[in-house]
Length: 275
Ligand code: C2E
Ligand code: CA
Ligand code: CA
Ligand code: CA
Image 1 (tube, protein in one colour):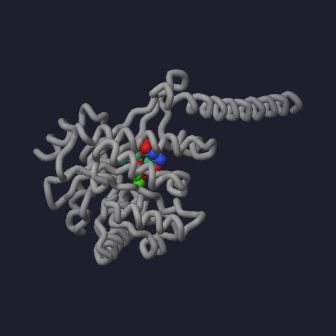
Image 2 (cartoon, rainbow, N blue to C red):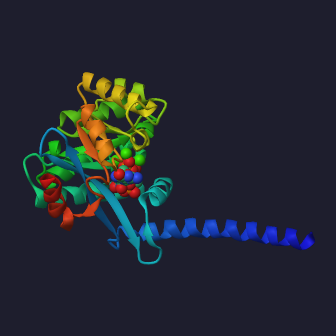
Image 3 (cartoon, rainbow, N blue to C red):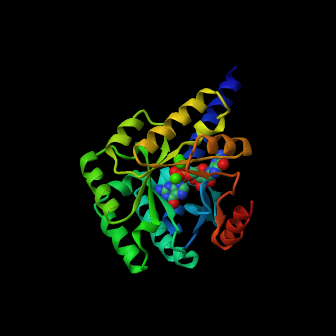
């Protein structure tokens, strides 16, 4: 009995210490990561169903020399909490503008993810305008993906900011659409021209299912509001067929391609076109 307790106590302690160590180490390594150029961008194709046009979403990748591969779901939150996310998002925007020129076509569009903190920053507008200008990239080639739970504070100011960015040419996409309880309110308020239906709705979208009706309705609603709709997390041919019948505008997911490094992008794009 006594021994058991001791062991239990020891386990909990070491677990706690372990977590704190991980977290501190993650934070410390993250601080060095930008400077040491440990981040790269991967790009995932977003395929327009009615045409040959293919856009891309930029997704950050981090291989730390000390910790190995860490997924964005693991480190973005930490970066938000320790005040590093703005620097990271800035780096992404700069890098995308730099790289977009090597894949330059008239109809090219690259989406970047902006975290809440970055969206609320007073510097965002200047940053986006300066960076695009410096790289000679027309803002209409950039889509800003914002998540539904992004807008918490200064709602009015943030919406105004997004309106000005939209006027400057940036596309605005509501990411992970449908998972927040405020989805419909965001449709009303945000100057977005695009929604991305979250993958939880796509995973079980078989004909006649609950999700089938939900997705059908989201597409109809968004299109009535003049927005284009992207389905995220599309993995199977069956899902593609169903979404096509629903008149969904764009499809993104492993079915077409996983996110790939920029060197592989031309090849991947060509093979999608051939299908
Ligand atoms: P997200 O913006 O919703 O990005 C889509 C995520 O789904 C990506 O994960 C992508 O690799 C994954 N995905 C794409 N197709 C499929 C599919 O068919 N099936 C499944 N199961 N997953 C698929 P990733 O790259 O690990 O990124 C996770 C999240 O981290 C992103 O979710 C986004 O919220 C955040 N993130 C990624 N890059 C950045 C960045 O540069 N800046 C910021 N602020 N956040 C980022
Ligand atoms: Ca996204
Ligand atoms: Ca998403
Ligand atoms: Ca997400």
